[in-house]
Image (tube, rainbow, N blue to C red; front, side, top):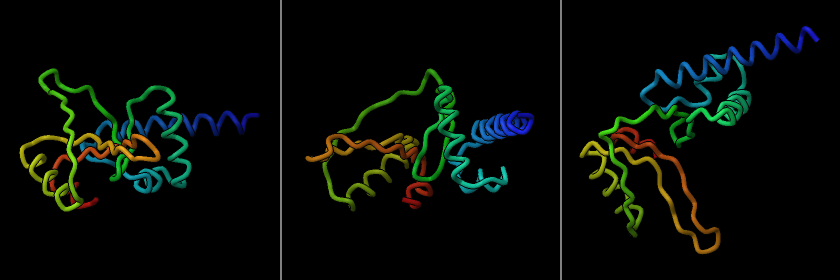
Length: 132
């Protein structure tokens, strides 16, 4: 029983450290990076992130890694842009958007069979766009 308490404490400490890393980072942090820093498997990190999200911590998974969504400034605005274009045109449009200082939070695709599919992106600049 003492062994279980030790594991729980280590897990709690690890999740606290994960929160600290994500809060301090301005860029997404991959599960592999977190696993290396915590000396655990990536699967443990996935489980830890799930537990943190269940406790209502605003963590999202993007194509570049995990991010902690800090409170946004009151001056920021959100808009939804609806469009239809080819993959090549998509990259061009995203470049135009991020070049003007806009963050693309996510994309939603309307699929005829599966309905709406939404993926978090958090694209802030051309560098994060080139990773896609």
